[in-house]
Image: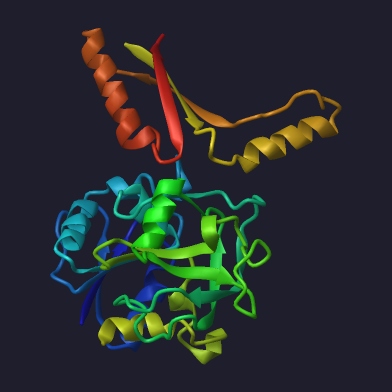
Length: 225
Length: 79
């Protein structure tokens, strides 16, 4: 399997993702955002970070970068595209996923491990998990408060597009287990075609015991199966 | 030709920053000021002499970049 990781000015999880992908024998090329073409790949990753210093709105300017024309073509062909954290924000700004990511409701940057419920395991990104599995995975964001209007939220539920939800130790999905104010405790969603996923948690930060856990591995292992 | 653009959150979108500003005003005794909503203000110049054309360009820049219409409204005026 081959992957391209898109590097924007201000990306800072790009190399972490490369290390994680290569751990799973996914051959990875870094592609600068100003390029007009990229190598053929099975997967494109929009990494975490602070593209364009989060100016205007997080991900807004990165979503208009040259390379995004190629990324959109890649997704339109049905190939895999994953946006992590700032990458998720870029996907919503590019219109590849519905909704938007707002400031965390308590206006604080949150950097910690959280419990995530696997709401949908019938996607190419989560097939190695079981439905309702609980995984422990880090988040690190200031704008992870997923917002969408009622119609979009209904569509997401009806089409099983909600993949990851914030929960507590006992799998409760409620206000207390919601770190940032996201609608329906949403931590990750997928498009209708099930080839484009956006998630606030960082799977690339938990693929080694030495880093505190390996619960993120399932995302990469799912892609390989 | 110069324009000003206002970008504001839609009324159904929570604005924790506006709320924090409101609370801070309360802390300094200005507690009769309520319902603060924070937004963005841009000024821009368009090198176009036809007002309708210039206006279309400003609208387009709002739709494509300055505002995210999932969460925000925009309006603009010539100044």
